Length: 412
Image 1 (cartoon, rainbow, N blue to C red):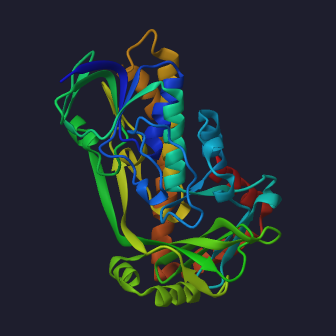
Image 2 (spheres, rainbow, N blue to C red; image 1 turned 90 degrees about the vertical axis):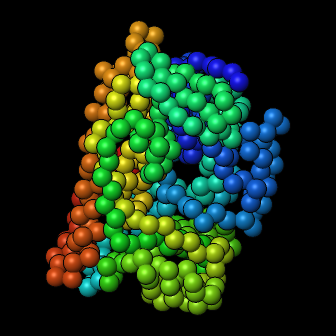
Image 3 (spheres, rainbow, N blue to C red; image 1 turned 60 degrees about the horizontal axis):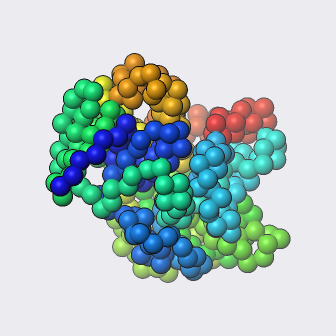
C-alpha cells in the first residue's frame, strides 16, 4: 500500500479524460489519471498504456471501429495542440465537405464547406484510433501518472485535499477530482451533484458498411417516421479522385425497432439501410456488426463543487442527431484547463471560485446544444408539425448567409 498527492486527479481515461489530463500535465500541474481498465485495444493489435513497453505498431487497415466520431475543427485544433492529432493515421481521417439533410415531406438543406468559406465541416475518425493517439501522447509526455487498471473504492471529500481509495489499497490525494467517467458517473454520484435523466425511448444503432458508389466526402441525414438516419463518410478509397467507399451509420429509432435491426443478418441489414437511405450510395455490404445504445438527455444541476468538477458525458448528455457529444466534451476539457493553468500557483485547484469560471464558460454552449437537439427531436417526432419542419428546411436552404452561420456555429 502506498499514497501519493497530486493537484488534480482525473477519473476516466476515455477521449475527454485523456485529453484533459494531457492538457493539464503540459501546463505543469501534477496530474493523475485513474482508469478502471484500458480501452479494448486488442482488436487493433495495440498495447494498452499500462504496458511498460512503448505503444508501437500500425493498426491493421481491414479493422474498423463501430464507434465513430465527427470531430469539429475546433476540437481538431485542440487535439493538434496536444500533439495527439499528428499521431493519427491520416489515411483513416475522412474530412466532411458537405452535409445533405432531408426531411420527411420534401424539405432539404445542404451545408457545403466551400460555399461557407471553410476547408471542411468536420473530420470523421474512429474512437479506438483517436484513443490510441491520446494514450501515445500521454506516454510520450510522461507528465501524467497513470493508474490503470485501477478501480476506485471510495472518495472522501475534504479541504484542502480529498482522498481517493483504490481497490488495491493505495490512496491518492488531490486538491481537485475531475469526473470524466461517463454518463453513469460515480464521481458525480459520490459528490452529490444532482442530475436529471430523460430517456428518449429510442436507441442509436451503429454499423459500418462498404458502399457501391463513392461518398465524395458527403454526410447524409434523413428524418422520417420519428427516426433519424445518418450516414457518415469513412476514409478508405477505391479511387482517390472520387473519394472513399465506406460509411458509418447511426440510426436513431424506437428501442424495439433498434432491437429488430440488430437481430437482422448482415445481408438483410445492409438492404434495409440501403433502402432507408434512398439508395444514395448503391449496394451496401456490412463491415462491422450492428450495435445499439440507449438515447437520453442528461442535465446536471451543477458541474462543479468545492474540490470536484465534471466534464464530458459526466457533465451532460445530448441527442446524437447533431453529432456534437464528444465535441462538447473536448470543449469542457479545454475550458477547464484555462482557469486551472492561470490560478493554480496562487489558488488551490479545488477552489470553487476558480471552478466557477469553468462552469460559467460551459453553461451557455451546453444548454444551447441540449435545447437545439432536444427541440429538433420533438419537432420531427410530431406528425402534426410536418409542414413546419419541412418548410423551415426549404427556407434555410435558400439563404446562404444563414447556412454559413450554421456551419460556423457547428465548427466552434
